[in-house]
Amino acid sequence: MTRPLPPLRLTHGAVLTGPTLEERALTLACGRLTEGPAPEVDLSGYLVLPGIIDLHGDGFEHQIAPRSSAQLPLAPALSAVDRDAAAHGVTTLWLAQGWSWEGGRRDPDFAEALLAALSEVRPSLLTDMRVQLRCETHMPESAERMLAAIRRWGIDYVVFNNHMQEAELWLAERPQALASWAEKRGQTVEAFTARILAARDAAPRVPRHLCNLARAFDDLGLRYGSHDDPDGETRERMHILGATICEFPTHASAAKVARANGDPVLMGAPNVVRGGSQSGGVSARSLVARGLCDALVSDYHLPCLAAAAWALADAGTLPFHAAWELISTRPAAIMGLNDRGHLSDGTRADLVIVEAESRRIEATFCAGRLAHLSGALAARFLARPEAARALAAE
Image (cartoon, rainbow, N blue to C red):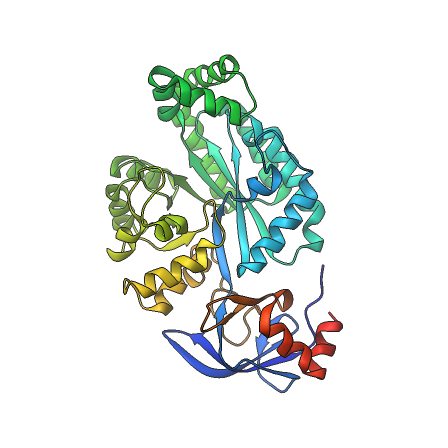
């Protein structure tokens, strides 16, 4: 594991503390934020913000397989994801990995290989990288295997995912779309159809299967939720089950039921940046404006996290501090991570330094480790002998 920097003091930056940006100094020591003297770097003209926390990202699939038929070795691909995340201000992230009857890179075999690879490279990572398992509901036969993987690899977050309605629709009415789906999973249409039919045959066992999983998740202390709830009735069932995180509701009714039950709602940052859902679901901006969104996640594009916060602030939908909370403070609270998501004495030194005028992320610190440094800020660090020596000692 890369060591934290020797003590370093960041001065004259506009630090986001609560609802305000105020000029103050922050000292980083032993991976934490603290007070006291240390070699200084002048951050005049820069914003100092809490590190971004991404609760769901599947953009890592593009690092693993830049083309659907060209998969790269997992360990170096995950290292590339780590560097990419740091460059975009992400200090804690969950890779959204499928555990699905679909096969391919969402198959249990692949999920276990990814978990093994992450365990291998974790000591060299600069960010806090974890895995969220996307558990397809119609797989009762794989329950014990999945629970064994959760225990072995320390998984702390699972979401229930149900692609059966979509699969049956495409099977009956959209053969070309079904063929494309099968190709993405590296299968023939015939083999993929057989997988759909087998999953459909499991439907009578699904309710008991989900109840058993929920009980096991509770015993393990996991956080779990559901993905793509299409309506309020589905969200209510998931809430009763114990899946209290509502991820990517596709209709406002599901978000409303989540809010009534006190369940956090997660939406995709690309939805905000693009001004709408690429799949035809509810607008994330509209949910944010109505107070029905608790956190934004990268979904398929890491750079959209910071861009979404700026977009919401620029549009007047939220003040900047509240917009940034959607990608830092609130995700931390949802996952019970009290040591990050805000900049106060004693917390992890997870922070992002942004050039105020251009809004470029020029530095990212994760637990006091320098994960990314670029642009004019790099010159400032290197121009100060004491700070340069601190960087060299990392």
